Length: 397
Figure 1 (cartoon, rainbow, N blue to C red):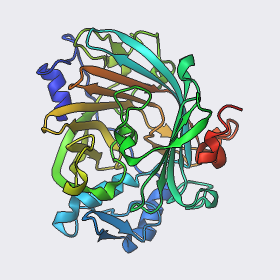
Figure 2 (spheres, rainbow, N blue to C red):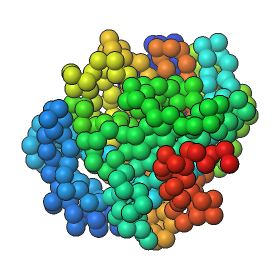
Figure 3 (cartoon, one colour):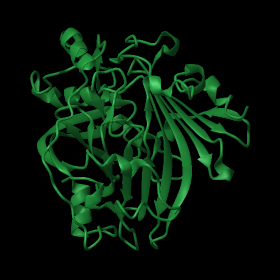
Figure 4 (cartoon, rainbow, N blue to C red):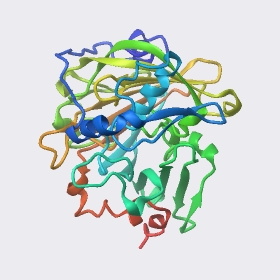
């Protein structure tokens, strides 16, 4: 288990698991990388190299698609962590994915409330390994990835939106925007906004990518070894049909929350499995560490598909465990791929972020998604609407 999950089982902090909690562990089910992604790995990975930046971090050069480092433990020992990290950073994601999402907040008094409904649209614009799409979407240049999230409910927050545009060149700063409906315009945010909460939740903007933070060239990344991690990665699809009630998650699949008790999946949600993982430590380089959100980020990276294992430990400035993230999901089928599946950032995905320091818990259920061609009718492939600053001005039209 991760340190955060151990703390929840031990009950050593304010938040703990229900006393009658029970999990069932089944066989480990393979989640291989998609065939085209593996083909691109074989064709292009031999040209990729890590180079040191003037700031002291590392970035890959000559990357095209697929895994940049398919054998990350081979090579300079001091760069093992960097190679694994960049494999996770460029892990497979489809051209577009979108899902309805909800935010629940649990306070220290045991009150759980559905605080928002959102629409998430994630667009990959470069380094693609997806059927029917080129490696680079010309209209999306110069960006690698775009994360768009618009609040639909409650009414007082309706139309608020966040857009994070990640450049194809990893040495360049992200373009961060927020649309403020009361002003009827968008604001470009400073890089300090990475530590700002998303729609009032315990998630920060730099927590949104499921493991890798933004501006990775500003981090010292160390390989801590390998570990077998319990993960719920084949949840039953029916558990992603509905967010349940305004004050609790679906009682068929979750233990109820209470004072000091976090919600947690019941055995009915699916069997857990033991996954082989790489464990990484990420710390901001000393000259960039001041005022950053966390002193250390511990990532658990799946050895088979390089997706985060659903567990992430976040430490505050004194080095104490501040937050832990757990993720429960199932691999979604990729259209036109001949049976390939993938773990996604935008549903089917339940993010549980336990904030030990502030005694809050945020639960983010993202329901069944659309991928690629499935998103055509809804217009989510439109870059000018969902992957560019001009699209923010089209929200209230």
